[in-house]
Image (cartoon, rainbow, N blue to C red; front, top):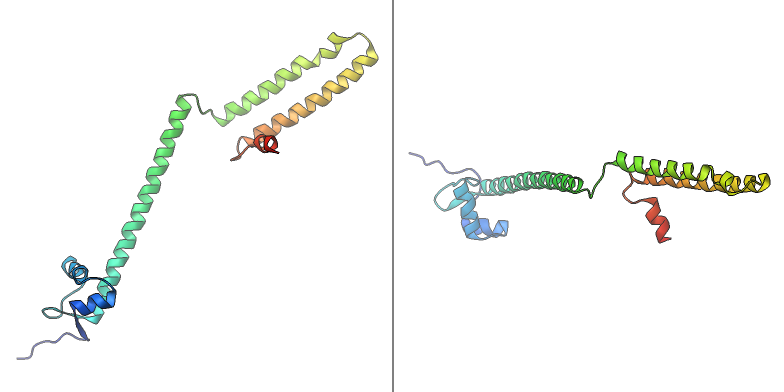
Length: 165
């Protein structure tokens, strides 16, 4: 009766551990987990050891990728909850509301300054000069309001950059 010998070179647990740069115990753990098949008692084919180690590391990579995806999803949920809390506590407002406030403030300033020249003087020449000054100021205010509204969508507002300069 012929005994079936495993095909390929066989190595011991110690040799497999040395080949993989790990301990004997770690290699036995791979055997117990089913990553490496035994050829004979205490012997393993070289191919089985390499395939088993590769399969183990591929499983670890898959597990790490799943854990990283779960972590990202958890962080996104946490961020969403934080934003809802800030909105409810009135620390955070909707972009449309902020733009509306900027627009309303610019309109209020325009309305207040529109009749200022007529209230200030009856002298037509002085009134024209004052109206030109007011119109220039209103154009600057409108431009600033437009910049502030556009900066709301950016990570960092242009107004902060101007203040720092």
